Length: 575
Image (cartoon, rainbow, N blue to C red; front, top):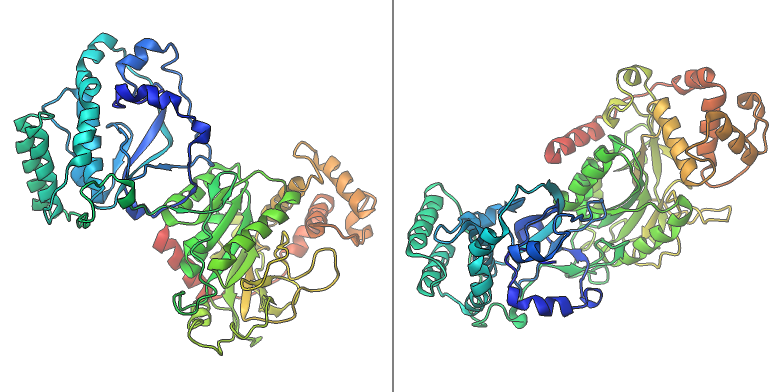
């Protein structure tokens, strides 16, 4: 297939191209490098009359709209037609909104796209195609009339592209350069004189309302801005998971001169259907460490989670990887990601959605702080005696501060945000979380990111850091039970189709216990991955009222430094 505006005399070459052999690099690019976003559409997309008259299935298109579907950036050494439907011009490309008035409606938006792309090459902007956001049911058309209206597309597109390819300007401002191009298009009979006047009025209007035109880049190195030798691209090839890229470059942790001055901490998160806690986690850690340092593996079916994570990936810049991998398969993925991002980090932690990174000074009477994290990381590159540089290798999170369930909060909203829950005092704990030193080879990151060697009964490191995890695991018992069951299903210990009694029988067997009066008779001593989740869920099923009373029995205090930081993160990047 081909879109309206594709040079019809180039179709044969297009069909002879082996798509499987085409080189498509997967990576990331900054939003600031995008000028125009064109969404493809399902159903009846914008093809030309030749396609419609020669293809019986021209109205049955379906493009991938899953969370894994990625945008496509068009290289600056090529042109591609885009239309005026489901198209977004970002601020730096507002000047490209003008549609020519001297050519037919079936031509005007295509001419505009090619003209705009030529100018965008001079300011480093690109066209990006995204997965579909619309389904198009086209009204009835007379295809022969469309064919006549599209005559310039068939006769002139190749020549127009050749003209744009060879065109250049030494105008110092973008508005002058745009106007010069419109004059050239009129002189070469691609547009009428009225478009020259209208384009000038359009540019003057933008100036009058205070629009700031982007700066022009120097193209003096070549008279041909289309040549591959002068093509500049913000694109950077990165590693992928199931075709989805995540940032691992640029490497810096062996170069003390050109690297960031503060220690760079990257967090790896596994999550599934944990709304709205997921939003709090992303906003908080994005403000704390930078969204580019968050690596999120998501298996959600909740559209609130997937929609938010697409926003976090595409707009905020977080590394989001959608995957349905079984929990038993994820240790190798966690380890692979850790190994590949180690060159662009100093320390790596694997955390859960209910775990928030802070620091603690070791004083048992004081709270952990979020604001102290930035101070703890600062000066890492310049200070040879920085406490984090003195670490001999892998270390551990020094403390854990646990949340305390609140029945009064949960009665109002079981999905309340973390700042509504009190906390216990920080506790020293040696096995809880590992802090991986990126300068060392990472052997294994286990599912919990724990400071222990899988299959062995000892810790990975006894070296302590000031890092503290505020653990919002204990909030509302219904959420805790729901999350526990979800984890047990992902381990294949139980099935989503199992009734409570069936799940209870399967989990009791793993502990070697009877299903009768388990809360009082089962010691829950057998060890297996996520056995604490199985124990919690069994207690919930077996003695709900007794367990609920014990669950809500504790009291605590609020961590105001952390709460203020959380609220600021909501305000700073809220959706």
